Amino acid sequence: MRRQLLALIGTTTVVVLAVLLVPLALLVRSHAEDRAMTDATERAQSVAAVVGGSLGRGAGGREVVQGVVDGLNGRGQPRTSVVLADDTVLGRRTGGVSADALKLARGGRAFTYAPRDGHGGGRVVMVPVLASGAEGKEHGRVRPSAHSASVVEVAVSEDQLHAGVLPSWLAVFGLGVALMLLGLAFADRLAARLVRATRQLAFVSDRLAGGELTARAEPSGPRELRQLAGRLNELGERIDGLVTAERERGADLAHRLRTPVAALRLDAEGLRDADEAARIGESVAALERSVDGVIRAARRAGADPGSQRCDLAAVTRERAAFWTPLAEDQSRAVTVSAPAAPVCVRVSREELSAVLDTLIGNVLDHTPEGAGLWITVTPEGTLAVEDEGPGFADGGAEVAARGESGAGSTGLGLDIARTAAEDSGGGVELGASAHGGAAVRCRFGACA
Image (cartoon, helix red, strand yellow):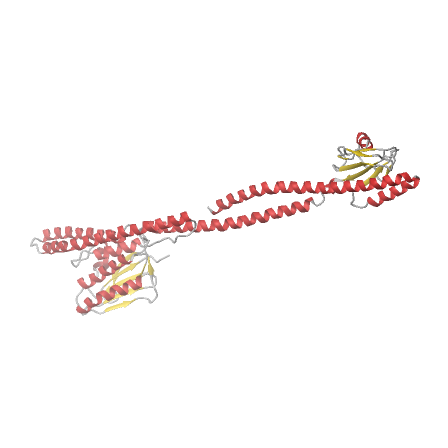
């Protein structure tokens, strides 16, 4: 978008400058020609006045005129010559002047003449000489006397005609380039502002689409983009409110269903027929897993897996502190080891809290009272929950395959942990604890 704006404004600037500067360049050229021809005309009139006053003095007059002409024909000056009545030329003859033009000038008319092709493309100013016996002028035409047949010719070459045009054109071109660069610099700043505001809106939209419902756009740029940012923020707030309401409904549903499900499980365990009790127990366990899936879906609230962030160390300390009073009632020692620095993982705070609650709850429910509990967090984003209980049979392979424990539990805690870890880009490992019991290690994906 930025390049397109620069190309558009650059093209517009070039067109505008061409419309303005091309006529200006032509005007400079025309002004130089007018100046050169005015100087040549004044020179020819001055020489004509000298010639007219000198020719009446006899033979010595020609020497005077010759000296004046030689003095005027300096280096780089227009070439001046005088054609006398007997066709004698004082000075260097001007090439390309036709006989008709010379005849017209001898008839008493002053004019500017363009020589025939092949003579440099310059101009020749031709002024008739008004001798002392002339009777005057009428309508620009001299009424010559017997001595007024001489003609002064001042030839201006092409280079002299356009002297100073090239530097003027370079100055005009430099001005155009400066204006062009200034326009592009202004356009670049304007385009950068527009692009920055647009990219911010796109980034916030991506965050909202990814489930980060707290993302808000800072209104910036033109009025239309500021309005769009405001509407996007209103949309985010509306979506956040709807998702929050859905979460509350999901939590309420979970609380309402857990009690009857727990009652069903107790009733199933109280059946005398062991096969029937096992069958009904499996159905109740499946129902509990379905309820737990609803709870997890409500917690995620439509967010893409791995799109949310939280501090693993802080959440672990918080949930360990929550469960410590119950552990003390069971005479358990709870040891928490977590870095002081934040450990950012790609899991929402609510989902990570659910993982810790279920793993710690499993230890408290399915190990003997007095068995110790160790909770460890590594800087790489690994959570380990270990105990001094009986541990997993077959190293936990059977539990991992079934999704349920062998101690009367549904195994939902492990399923919750596995889902959260895998969604973040990690995984779960089951094994033996260094303290003799079971160990559950959840490796969460670290923040980018």
